[in-house]
Image (cartoon, rainbow, N blue to C red):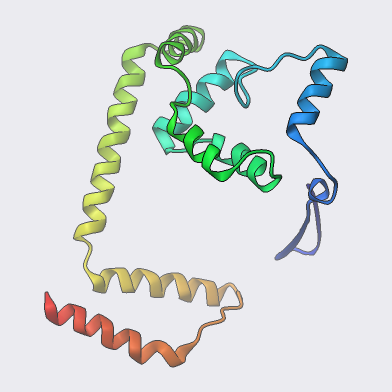
Length: 182
């Protein structure tokens, strides 16, 4: 990816690889046949640490499944079907016993203990639950105030907002109706 900018507020992205034909399957075959490369059984699984981050840390802490990116690229390139991608995403990221080995190895290598990881995981779940409850208990008035604050910041920064104000009265009436039905 190449970033070109002359204006500090505007960055133009030129994705060079999107302009050339590329097949992940063919590239992998060339690497294996000509260079003796071995597949690591997953994206960024070349070390125990990156395998741990991609298969345990990101999914459990942030809910990020990096397989989505790779599989989406394969679907766009017509190397696999969308249906096969959805089936692949239903499978676990990595077998539990393998993840436990990585957790143990990474915890040992990085001076962490399993109890710490379990405590972190429980804390993430507690924070997620708290955020969910907080969002549900926030009034519509407070939510509108937050949205208006964000809009004022955007306008203050000089961002161009394309807002259709003709729909405001309709939206306001719908919110008022919802408020009355509570």
